[in-house]
Length: 263
Image (cartoon, rainbow, N blue to C red):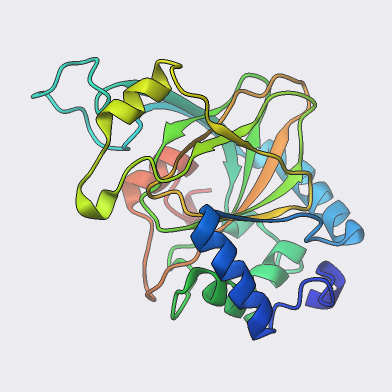
């Protein structure tokens, strides 16, 4: 399966500079770029079959964490927004489980797709993770599982919805709630959100939708799955520099192993 069998390149001309510039303008303005029906139906079915077949191998875990993904600060009260705990629970299969013939791998490795991501995000170079687990992941959220409120450490994330549950699992966010580069954490804004005093925006998406999201300053979560149909989402992760590995502690936390040899 080549790239043209996965994506309608007439509708999504990845190598066209004008298309990339339009997508970049949208991402810069809105903090999110949503491309519905990005994946052709046959390729999406292959992705769904692959995700379903891989689910028994998924590592499921739950963690409590702060919105800022930082350790507890003993100098602040326990109910301070920096110390408030939320829960994330999901399953995951890793890059080494994704078949070489998978349309996800074809998409991830395609120079035209990588060039499109660079044009959209403004990155000058993109590289896969150096460890064998982190470049392509498929995430699973079964009934009751969720992704708690948080800010990302990375500047952008790329996701592809493979299967949508029948209820719940809403992607909710507030754009630019903090300015991490300026050191402005906006604790009061985070408190108001956690206490239900402000309503977030909700991102609507259907299977086959590609999303690029700037989550470093935009707080976001995925609400609990309220159905028996598993939410399945592919995450395509790149780095601006070669040779970057996810830390061993992060790999053990999220994947339950360090590499292929410990599978």
